[in-house]
Length: 72
Image (cartoon, rainbow, N blue to C red; front, side, top):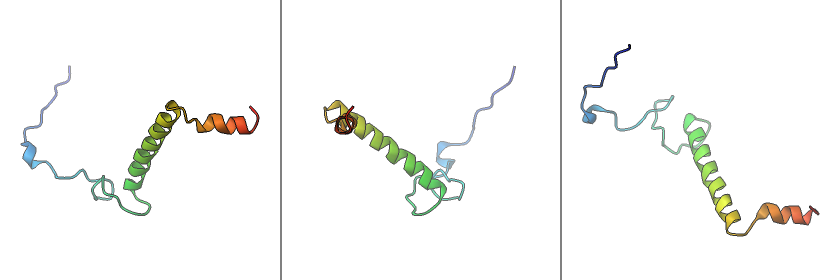
């Protein structure tokens, strides 16, 4: 059986930010090609997907309207 060790340092000894691969805050909004861009892209895509689902549930289906226009 494997033994688990617990961390003994105080929570005040932890770093203030979570550094990413480039040593900068993972949540910083930095322009350009960097590790933070992937996180922000995923967050904004999730917000957009949720917004579309709510819009569709409200009865304003863009997909249904487009399919109707092309004859389906």
